[in-house]
Length: 493
Ligand code: MV4
Image (cartoon, rainbow, N blue to C red; front, side, top):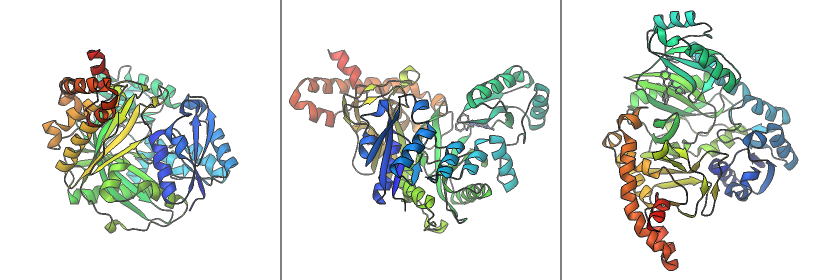
């Protein structure tokens, strides 16, 4: 096992990685920016080092500075978390060269999955189903039109170096290629430094289903079941669940074994996720995420596997201690990403100071968070307050527990998306498991968010008056429904 691990990340995921270290008796090192001087994750670590100004380009993305700190303090491993340097093959290589173990896949696997064309071709070769499309870069409009007419409209233009939704365009007819090919090429060039684009058949109203995999250094690989991540907005996932409501044991075995095949085909090691589009009984490889994901918590809840600890074990050369048949699903889990953003203002970030805070608890609830009362959410990074996960024996129980936890959650001082989550969770289609990537628009969720906010503000007014009285304050925070408290307070003054 490692002696000391540096976590090259911030917020809740830095704490998540350090929790795994602590349980394994591994010393922890945090690195923090100017904006994170007083952040919880930096205090949680055994040692913490300042690495630079708030902009991530000068801190959390500063590869050489981070490796320098690791070498100086004698860390033998670096955990990259998600985002930042986690899927940067150059960073993984630099760690390898510095004699520090990068707690993630080998750099070549990151690189291969980073190029969507290379990934597609590797998958075709391995017998993994992909959406019909091109196996090489598409350069001209004429070429694009020819390919599109052979696979049929609608098609989607994608940046090969893209992912996560930037640099894509749906094209419905020949005329649609006018300008759009070139515009995607230039977006790709400026966003990813690579103008290469390719074309795929556009799958309409798909579900997003991803398989968690674990692979050790000895060719053993397993799938830790699936997550459904269809509730998203502009490629920002908001609610995920495990397992997927559409899954059958047969389909799970087929998709899971396909995910393992995909991982083995590229010599993958460590934890990773194979994303699929699912539509009308068919599934297609979309991309592979070569990191621990935000939503890993729900997989942990239904399988009992500690994915962050598995990452550490695999990275330092341990064999997987379990086989595919040892992994079973117990119950159902849902995650809501609690963000400081305003769902009624196009989800605009709402950074600022959290004046009052009480997270949910009780049976089946897990909260992963890097914030606390008095903490200021910085405009420099993402606006996540916490990941609220609920487990139940059945999907219904998980939903009911999540609703109860959202009722308990109090955040005062910043606007949160808690009303959005309440609106989705009470939606009949959600309860029936009828999900697609267009769910939020199709079910006019924002209209219901408005109703939730009005309902909550009535309860919030009661809380606001209690907050005037010092003695009642703590109890009030504890008992309250508070997602829109800051507004309620303003109204009563
Ligand atoms: C697609 C697709 C339909 N057909 N590819 C979105 C982000 C990037 N990972 C790929 N994405 C998509 N690729 C084909 N051939 C639809 C999407 C897509 C999507 C995928 C997963 C989750 C949410 C999504 C929302 C819109 C579009």
